[in-house]
Each structure stands twice: as C-alpha cells, then as structure tokens.
Amino acid sequence: MVPTVLTAGHVNWDVTLRVDRLPEADGEATIRSQRQSGGGSAANVAAALTGLEVETGLIGSVGDDDNGLLARRELEDAGVSLSGLHVVEGADTAVKYLLVDDTGEVSILGNDGVNEAVRPSDLDASRIESVEHVHLTSQHPETAGTIATIASEAGVTVSFDPGRRVGDRDYSATLAAANVLFVTDREATALDGDPDRRSDDRILAITSGDDGAEVRTPDGTYTHPGFAIEATDTAGAGDAFAAGFIASRLEGCGFDRAVEYANACGALTASREGARSAPTAAEVERFLTDRS
Image 1: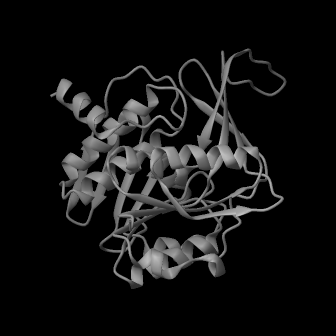
Image 2: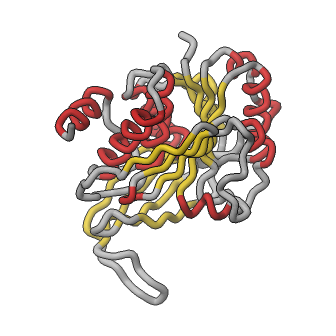
C-alpha cells in the first residue's frame, strides 16, 4: 500500500528517566523510575499519524543492534511502513536519555548513533513522489534538502520541523521548499531572529507549551490557547502536534480546527509518559467533545 504521508529523519531508542528535578552543574537528582521505548522525531510523527488513521511510511536509519531491532518492531506494530528504513550493519542505533522532572519538563542526552546514515544517493525518488505529503525532521541537511526538492518538484506538499539544532545547521534548501514550518517559540527566534522568514505561501506553526499555539498563514493568523492539563512528560508533544495538524489538514479542515486538533494531540501526549504516547483519532475526538 502506498502511504499517504512520508516522514523522514531520526529514528532513536529512548531511555526515559523520571527524576525529582533536572540537575544543575555539580548537582544531583534522584531517579524515580526508568522506561524504554522508540523515539526520534520522524518515528514519533509516523507512529502518531498511524494512530490518527493516516497511512504513513518512514525514511530513516538504525543499527543492527538490539535497540534497532526493538525500534523497528515497535514501529511495525504501530502500522508504519518501513520500506524506507535503512539498517546499518555493525552499527549502533542512536540512544537518547530523557530526563523528565515532576513538572514534565525534559532535558535530553544523546550518543552518536547512526540516525543520520541516509544520504541522497540512498533515496528512492519514486517513493517520495507517490505520497500526498512529506514531513521532514532534524537530519543531515543535504538529505533533508534533497527529499524536500524531490517532493516539491513533484507537487507533493512538504512540512519541516527542524528541531533544537535549527540555528546550528544549514537547512536553507529545505526551508525554501517547505510549505509548512513547525517550530517552538524558541526555535522561531533561532531562525536568524526572524520567525516570519518564509515564502509568501508558507504556513508557520509556532507552539508555545502551556500557552497553546499560533498558526500564521498568508491570509491571517489563527491562535488556540491550548488545554489545561497536568503535564506528565512533554517529550513527543511537539511531534504529536505536528501529526495532528497534518492529519486534520489532509482531511480538509480549516486552520481554526487544525490548530485546535493539533493542540489536543499535544496535550494528550504531554499528559502521558513517554515520547511515543500520542493519542488515537477516537481519543482526540472524545477529548474535544468533553471540552466543547
């Protein structure tokens, strides 16, 4: 089956440590609990989209170690097509250690795994051209730019979530081709201090945690204050927001509905443990109905 959406970027294995507080320099924190699951922004969005009943495929890379096997099995169980996932022999899968405090705030440590092993020569252009939408996350800039260009030239819409390293890497080719840009308010500032740097028809979705989100379009700005929830773990909430926005727009929803739906996805994820905890379509609908 040809996916409707193709995500591309990092596929990781996450180790989440719940701590009483995020340690400062020369400080110490107490580990309350530990859990492991799949992670990586591209993989998170892919899994979230399948939960929202969108057929989704993935471009990324893992090692042939135990963590890579676990990551692949979890994505397969979620229903994500893995024909674009590269398994690198003799290599280690990237592992992220997420420190989550009692308020749900997150700090991340990571190793140098093989989550950026995919290069332009590894890409199957026909697979990229066959989908309705491509969602790009943090990855090697040349690979991201090539995928974005192939998609754009084929008339496939492109969204991009550059992540925390947006100010450190040259994503100019990807930014030029993207129709939708997902950033936090901090990441928007990192884009040369100019969150409005976009083409005339670009959509900019800015998430602000507890303060909800704002979507800027050529025709106007749409805001939603977010939902009052007790945050348990904010890891993956931004990925769930992106998945909700993409899914609702593919269904033909207007921007008011899309930002509300996306905020609901992010809120439900933040109220649960783990980055791979995005809600199903039925759960989102129940959540919104209860608050209408």
